[in-house]
Image (cartoon, rainbow, N blue to C red):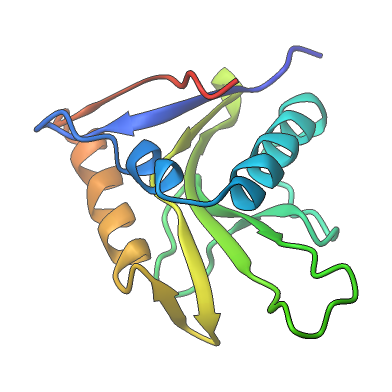
Length: 144
């Protein structure tokens, strides 16, 4: 089975929201993302939800859209109670027939339905709709 290809969304103005978010994260979040993405790249079964702590999950409620989901992972606190676990959510558009996942933007989940940046999922869905309307593009990422 061929590996999944990860790309990032490029907005019509040339902005690459995921890359901008990623570049602003610390080494721990970046390293865990690369590890997570490489594992998913090799083993991912498309839109099928995974039950592991690190998973791709289709969005089913407010942001429901074909192929739209999130890559989820948590940072490991390694038992240090002083260090707060961070929950990372990456809105992603999948195209299973092409074995392609388009990284849109990243976000940190701060509470039940609160993210930083605050409108990450609303913005991501708007950018997906723009992409599907021919505004914007996607290209292979160069993080690894």
